Image (cartoon, rainbow, N blue to C red):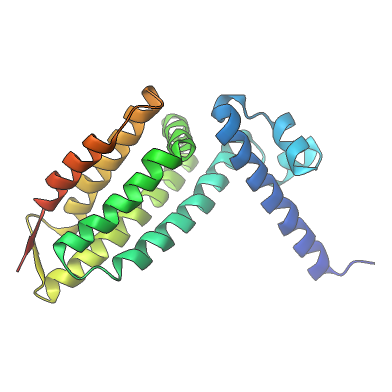
Length: 202
């Protein structure tokens, strides 16, 4: 007979398979086309198990976005730790932006769907706010450290600068969703030029 620890591990494994299947389905079918039936088949579990663990498609989307965001935030925070100048800080941001805009538009599609859901679901609004804050905090924290060390000067407080830079990124990602396949290289370079104006090397 399985122990309680084994049961918990099995449940965790199944939950991870469901989240991974949802991520894969969104990448191929989009959010609207990713039904519980599709996800259950790809995860190799019953449809009822999706309802048991997550309750709704919206809650499952939140879990996918949370897991993806955790990976992105960790990678960005690690990269920013190696930035020791304004130019390097912006370069790391550009790399993160290029990875999302060019290669992972499904992540932006999920966020857009969650934004819509957040307008009528306070719980999802709270989760989404937490997700967005993580990226802003990582960028603001490194900017504040470099400013305190006398390496750079910011044109505004670190949180405001981070919000502006993230606004550049999400705006371009949404533009790409409206016109898939559009070459965004020139737009990203202009955004990088504008972002460099927010930081001054000392």
